Image (cartoon, rainbow, N blue to C red):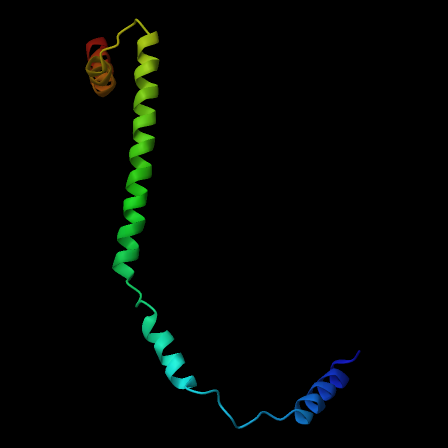
Length: 104
């Protein structure tokens, strides 16, 4: 069916059934009561709710990863001291520079 014919058919059907002038009893009061019953939007409340949910999720992930790393470290017997590993990682560049200076 062509769009033009469809449009004309819809317009003639709308003209055949004109709207009535009567409004249901207390229509305006019912609408305003429903609008007043709606809670106003609180963007700060929505943000705080979302951030608390994210904090709970992050706490759960942290606990899972902490337990996993603890069980991984129990299986290893070589150098379990994390402070020594950190010290070697931080000072690795200094040790290389000292070795190069010594070679000259």
